[in-house]
Length: 561
Ligand code: NOJ
Image (cartoon, rainbow, N blue to C red; front, side):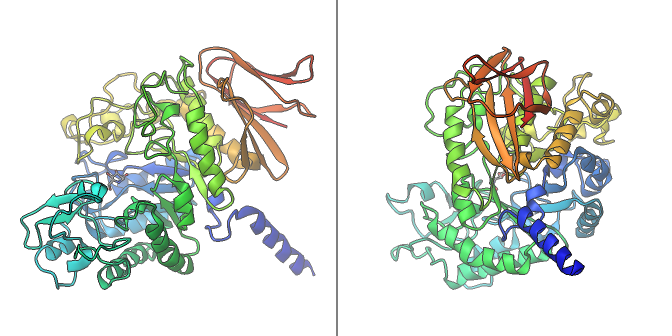
């Protein structure tokens, strides 16, 4: 009887935990830390970070309060696009170490309760990859059909794909189709509606694209069987060509790759880089990003001009998270709620603190620790799985002058090496300063992990506290419901409600330099302040019975009812 009782207890705990039964059981409590490996910690003195360096920092990583790591690509690469031009999908690049080093990282991370997620570059390879080298020679070799070789440039009706035609003098030329840079030929997963007058357009289930899928599964298995916990899938929406509504790409993932993955690796996670959760969750992904890119993005919250919504109009008066307090919430709210409502209960919309493709949080006018604490309170108390981009926990600053490195272009500014301590190169590397991967902030007062550790009021310690609070309160977690309580036409402060398992919280966010207040519907009981960063934050009933929430400048607070 007692055994039976325990069994039911476990069953019901699982039922509460897993938001969606097809998602890995650990995901709803996951907090990710993204590492761009070239910039984290160098151990061999060549000025570039490596896997041994990440292993040496695992205790620090754990101390932040995260329990999963997403690594940007570590495969053998031509380094024309930060590792996203993969030469050998089955081998770790020697700049980082060996496959055995990666297995060691996986094991050491697991010992500490940390999951490891790799980057899966599913849509393209490097032009130096042996598959491409063979494919460009002749049409009937093993890898010939892994790529797409248009024999002419069609007129009209093909606009978006035409920009991806690359002229080549290879025997299979005159063109191949790329995905991003010319050095990244697209892998051939077929075309949505092959045009019989375009002989290079193979059907999604033609032998070539089917062989490509088998190869992709092989790559996934190779690393999953070594112990990784899943993948972030680069340009996951790009696989099937001429698929404007993405229905064929969704079908490919959903009906084949996802079914297979779910059966083989039920505890593995697949994270989409799709920037449209409504589509990617439908395709079977566990979560997708809502950040700087695509139609759905959060740029109006954080940036003046950095990739705002296409067609969003003239330059904004300023981002929401700015002390000037001139920003708005409507643009973000409309896009976010569309996505949130579309995937609620099925998968997660995730707003990362940053990533390797756009400006860091600590940029433009938002460089004070107080500003960053307010932004972090927002990012770490919204629904979905949090992602902290390495260094954001100490306020690592965007370097707008960083020279393009490994094909980064302007993105070098957010890929700067980590700042650890007061030793040479801030403890990142013992190499001479001119060999450091990307120049570090030369400011002698620059924040380092060592300084942040020593200051109880540092951003780092604030983030630790927030993550602890989040883990202790179901209402602040990934699955708790979300609702905007404040008003779009009076955007400061932003107040939202989170509810889960009978617990209810209000999060109050005021990035502006003014004290602000908002009048909201009254509640039966008075809430208690349980966290945040503020000089003053009050919740009072006014004479007509409504509740007035007031908060000091540059502040954030969390109430629990
Ligand atoms: C998205 C990646 O995040 C980015 O860094 C890369 O350049 C492109 N995909 C192409 O792989």
